[in-house]
Amino acid sequence: MVGVTAPASKSVSHRYLIGAALAQGVSTVRHTLESRDLERTRAILCGAGAIMETLPESTQASGAWRVTGMGGKPRGGTAQAPLSCDVEESGTTCRLLTAVLAAGKGQFRIHGAPRMHERPIGELVDVLRGRGVRVTYEGREGCPPLLIDSDGMSGGSTAIGLGESSQYLSGLLLAAPLTSGLTIE
Image 1 (cartoon, rainbow, N blue to C red):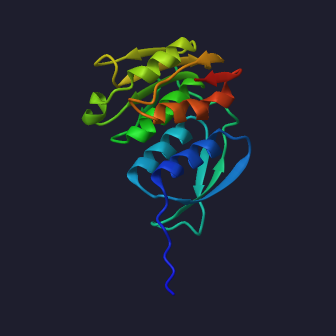
Image 2 (spheres, rainbow, N blue to C red; image 1 turned 30 degrees about the vertical axis):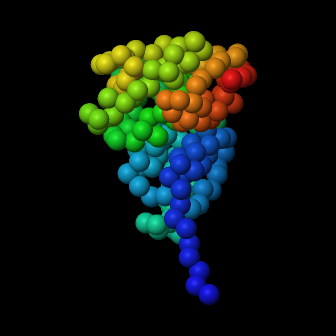
């Protein structure tokens, strides 16, 4: 019998790292995919207040991290110097972190490679605006780059479709514990 180790999931790896980064205290996250997309997610989360240290057992095939969380509130920059959130070509990073950072405090500039600036995010932005988050498109309406100015996302009831991207729902679910009680339909 031959044993085979399945590669780590990119989708799950993003969510592991985001959850650990939002938590209070120190978490250990193992078996994450090591990719450029995950590098972008880690860099943005660290810019917003998390600390991520590579563990000795980390390999190119399977990452292992010690994550000191930001205690539930991503921290952005100021109007003069918003936190630069360069997602490069990672749609997953863009969609998940747009919702999560909108639940934080401060200014966040979500931007990426030219192709990313053609990808829709309007449906998620509409939900965020309905929850009291100020979002300004810096280019084409409905697409990044965008500037988020937030004092935290309000709770309440909201609806989102899954036709454009199910990652909008995932981002809102990750952000929900940072609100005063968000119900998503």
